[in-house]
Amino acid sequence: MNRREAIESAVRILAPRIPRHEFEAVTDHALGSRGLHTASPEAAAWLSLVAYIRHRFTDYDSLLDEGYDVESARFFVLDDMNGILEGWGSPRRVQAEDEAD
Image (cartoon, rainbow, N blue to C red; front, top):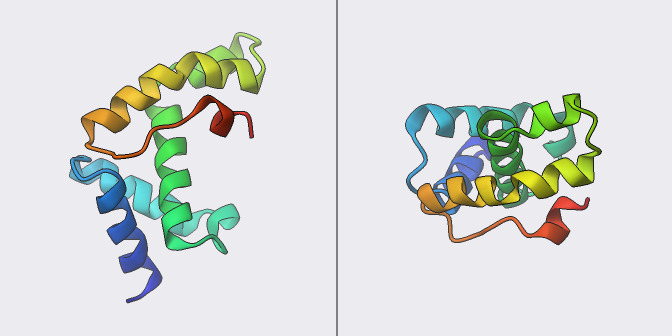
């Protein structure tokens, strides 16, 4: 199994009901991110999924533009992120302590 297949498999497990176009975007991000290059396929899939949701489906970037610090902005979008994960059938949720990184 090559890296793309391994990441795709991990994304399917993490978000079995993710729409196809979102699936492709998350997978492509996991493969193209320098920071995720050495991560395990499972870690790359999760981190890519979380980042994608944060930037595409929440007010995170707007909060940063309004002057909120990263930790506060992440706190305020946590419920929205977990709602998307739930809707996509994910068995995992983002925890507040995960977002403090």
